[in-house]
Length: 546
Image (cartoon, rainbow, N blue to C red; front, side, top):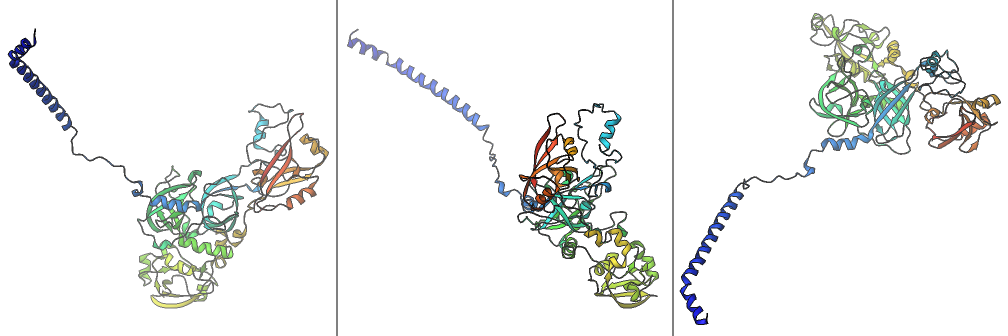
């Protein structure tokens, strides 16, 4: 086909090509419209108008409690005590009584391995050298305390440390145990002051004014319940001025008036602080009211107010004991405020005297039983505390002004305040007098009783030595027990200084200073023909050692 013929053919087919192009475009437009519409419909499903979520800034979360804990927790301590039975508290030579589970007998000649045998019974419950001495186990208890002076003075409960042979304190975040000594106690408020010796100033908690506490205020309790260190619980002040929470509180604990809280307080919390939202200690956790079976937290805990604790603490650190004023009167709380009895004596309110101590200040001032005291220093009396507190807080030798009714007639009298412990000596003895406060338990001792090594003693240890000292026995809960020294050991060196006899030993021990590291080289029987085993026992010399 020539060029002219092709052109002629193209012109004849132009309408057909145009129709083809138009058809193709139309189909494309239709497909695009359908696809576009489908996409648009799909987008409409996710366009809800909802706003995206934003992770909040952690700074805006509440950190009030945690800030208080960070501030106070370093000043809260863990207290553990050991109380030995009377037979074990005597120093000097005597029957050795083990306080830990009986150690295996290393004597190969002892073939009695039957756990049900009579010999095994005696091995477990009696000392091997003196089976007539029954082996009593020491009592161990736990509590808490709060450091109130950077030099190591700690407030806690009297019942935490009462009668303890040894008191040990562990600081928050530390594993070391510090031996503590009792500075003074006050059984009537169940408070005690103990002290530890540390090589650095300690963190201190600030005590607040408990008079400002209101029912409903938030509080935190910090302590070591069930030996769980640094436990923090929160609650509110449920009530104030609670008293008579124990059956004998009328006669023995008339100076206890508690803050009640629902912050969880359990065994081991005793002596720890109750803290307000200002980060100040406003109470010392002391008691809980439990169910018949639980023996744990029931949401009813009691703390001694800080103002009471401050007063007791200041007296103890200044004179070792607490002195309270008295005028020598007694009364029964329920009977003394009976409204019918008061009206019969011509009074609307006041305290009816039950008895007046012979030769006491009240008797010398002319007061008699059945007098109704209505005012102290011009302030009206409605409860027994209104009468007792101002008199107890008055320094011995100062005077108080009393208004009272007798035969329905008002009278006034000035009474010189005396020392309660001297006016009621029997009651003071029951509650713990000054002598008891001064009877501090031994805080720490080496507790090693030695004698010169003899050939017979060396033979017992199977030691081929002629010099050293034989450990006759170890005092329970002593420094020696802490470093795992045992009865029957032979001490041959102290801090690399050879020990030939008791004189050498005493000289080496006498040169040690509190806080100094000491290393004992001892020989112990191996229980075989291989001879004695050498052991190196080290520790830090306690603050109070002998």
